[in-house]
Length: 285
Ligand code: MEV
Image 1 (tube, rainbow, N blue to C red):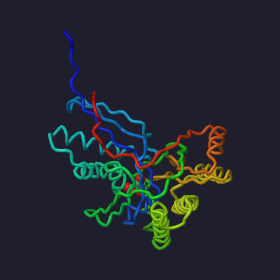
Image 2: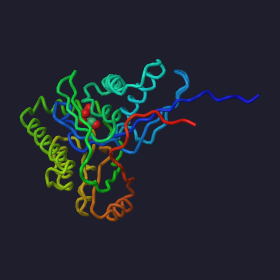
Image 3: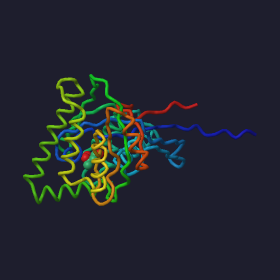
Image 4: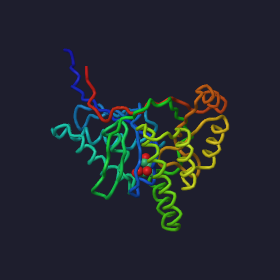
């Protein structure tokens, strides 16, 4: 007798990068995020038969935990026989993220749910504003270099910034305000409403994140090497202080130089595409 395989449902959700606004977004400042071409996938036929696979590196700032929370919520919804509802998926995923990270902004689960490019702002716990946007300019090729897995989880980095804010309120707030300025310039760059250069936006954002204290010494060295070759780079996500800081987003007008640097220092380099689709039911069969 031929044994029939049970019908499997497949759901996938993307990872993300933060173009500008990480950390500040936890305190109500805006962030710009993009879904990327790395996905977490769940295959399931029942609550007891679930398989997870992913090509989003864990704990590296690419939103692996949010993609998991989003896929898990979507799976739950379907197993409960409810209708496909992105707002509901996002709401549930945020609750899961809160259990993991304590006080997340919600930007990671929101970008993984809706995909594309997102302008996001948490006004209050129960009021999160966001808007999908379509860049009006062709974006150049961007790369990701892995600076290594941070030794601190996101929750610890969020607490670190919170402690700094308590101790040096005016200084940290002034950094947040500068981050907001950069995030707004980034928005205007994407919408072609301001003649800012991507190079400057990336450099400014990185400088501010370094001032915030979320970039490790070894990652700063790596970014300096990239800059000396004429490139531009920033961490993306929560960062890391003690050892590595997760992935860094890299841009160079001459791609070859970045490849040479990665080869020379045996770095894990890959190109990344932005504006990818959010959570979706994969076609089966
Ligand atoms: C987002 O990827 C990283 C942080 O801004 C935390 C958050 O927004 O929840 C550091």
